[in-house]
Amino acid sequence: MRKHLDALFRPRYGALGFVALPNVWIFQILFPLISPVMDLMLLYTLIVADSIDGNSRRDIPRPLFAGAFLLRPLPGH
Image 1 (cartoon, rainbow, N blue to C red):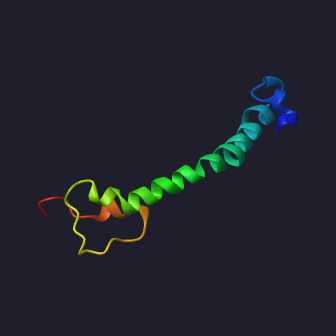
Image 2 (cartoon, helix red, strand yellow):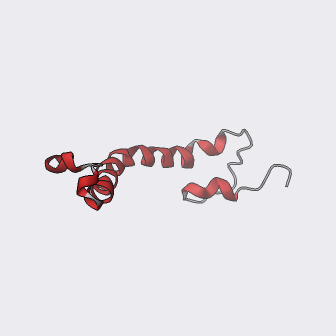
Image 3 (cartoon, rainbow, N blue to C red):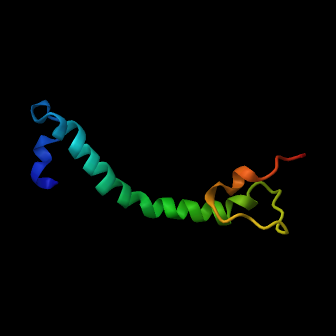
């Protein structure tokens, strides 16, 4: 990656500089670096976010996935 840094976003190198290298930087460097933060956000959603609204009902088991808050009934229903 460092070896070809001069090709990044240069028209002379065509698709390599505008497609391939940015793709590698995003999916091989950036995403693996931020994935621990995404894991922590998932844990936060599963553990803490359910009790933030003040209407938490502990007697109802929560589904074990991040979109569980979307399946809760609306207040008053």
